[in-house]
Image (tube, rainbow, N blue to C red; front, side, top):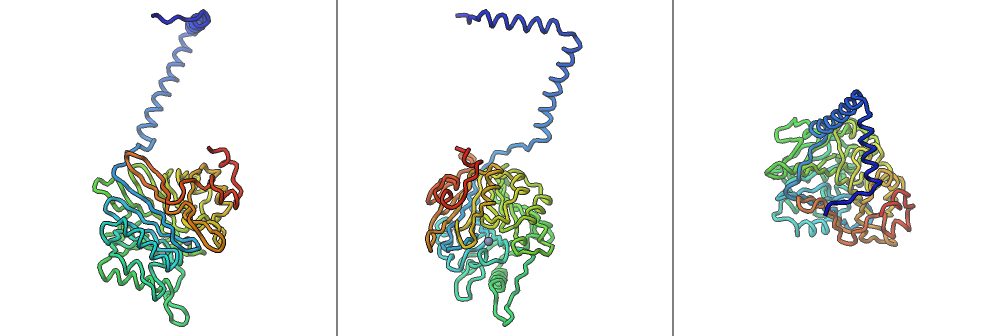
Length: 380
Ligand SMILES: [Zn+2]
């Protein structure tokens, strides 16, 4: 049956035709030119300026482990195909048991292909240097490539000649090099100044998953704070990006943005465990993370995550924020627990937590202990 039009609709069409008829040839020509420029501009933008979307193939998983200790620290296990990667070995000597039992159940061999050591603080190298009596990650696993920080203000020994934790780390690392591990500083990787040191490491045969070593100004300049020496890396899965900046602080973040072509990321590990000194607007406004993970203990002795950090995450539209542990009385417990961010072609980027999948903004801990920013109250 033919569609019937109302008198009002017919009148509207007639009026439109009249308007076109009345228009001068000049104005019709001008409208045509504007339309052609708009369509042409759209195609030129898409072809030459917009980042082409590359569908991710294969799989990469980022595991933020609970580290079984009451203060914050980092040890992040990353699985990309057959590659096992570890960023740091915190948070305390006693964390080694939980780290090894977690990764042993996920590794197919006993080899960590890439070990990235961001900076020489205990909460990042405790299980790499050990206490002197404890085992280390180097004792338990074969390491392929070690990438660490070019600079530190730590000494190898104390005034009395005893090893420092940093000194023990260097001993353990160098022993592993004797066993065949390759060792490069992040600066050597970035500049590719040593044979085998690369700015990009392929983690899949088709080159679709990569590890990129970013440039940090403090790889080669004296910093006021040890945190700013942090090795910064980014993983790529097709067009997806996953950013890790160790404990880099505000001025380090400014240099990071100025010296690297950072784009929006799918995942950002909050710098310095959610401290107010990291995750600043200059970085967040560029990377606009879809997911942010804070590795650490909410409410620990440093008061992480700081209110200022929460406010900046919220005002930059970062709504999916997760944290591994929380302080409970004099002890600690799982917050989101072990947090896994996985990226796959079929399922996109997913977050799975061992304890609770709720983002921070919806949790009782945050309501009780921090002021929820208005921007988060508006998000369903
Ligand atoms: Zn730290």
